[in-house]
Length: 329
Ligand code: SAM
Image (tube, rainbow, N blue to C red):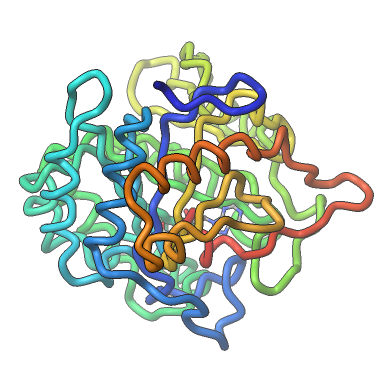
């Protein structure tokens, strides 16, 4: 009974935001004045949701936020998630997206609990620029320690996500190429999407896939690596085989036709697209005492409502009902 939406897309990738709080105030994501806007649930509620969704065909779980490492109990939660079994009888793949600030200490315990992979967000590879973006002093060293601890713990491939903004950090492209080679991590550039609290997005701010490739090729020639159909990143290795970069280009090269994702927000709403203009209250149903079968029916029905594609940059674009930090990126 694998989950399939109305457009024939297999939905096997679930992202769960486990908190709406964040310890960074990245300039392109948050206003810097507002904090958490939505509740967080006890882990047992996310676990029940995940169990039901894995029973319907989800094979990959990603924990995110807000900042997921702010949540005490995350290690036990991952241990519980790793006991779930997919329809094929395997442990689901478990991944984490984090800003890495609190990662160094717990990378190994997370791995031991069943975490398979980690993606760390970094938008600059120099300490001063990093502080300007995150609006938190002295974060860079902590995050770098988190990257290294993750590699050491075998959470590979360690992926670094970088959002580029024109006129702000686009000069970091080549430095990230070098970082990928020196630290043996995969650096993935993500095109900036209109999902920020401040609503500052314009098409001109987006540094596109084509531009990134051109800049990087001036540093060293790149070869494209074949990628899976449902993989969001275009992947490239440097000609000498050392280092890998990826580019996630939802704006200039949308991949909605291959989207395999569904999301749960920290307050237990199901979202079928980052750009959804409404969400679906799974937790409310649970609170009212629905049994597993009722929740399954609800989920199957919601999945049929998954949007065909986003409409970024088109006339009449309607902003999503939540911004990235409150959805879970
Ligand atoms: N706190 C965690 C972190 O920093 O990775 C998880 C949540 S954060 C919202 C997830 C990712 O979304 C980060 O890599 C961040 O750079 C990215 N992001 C935030 N706003 C974005 C936007 N408007 N467009 C593209 N990516 C965005």
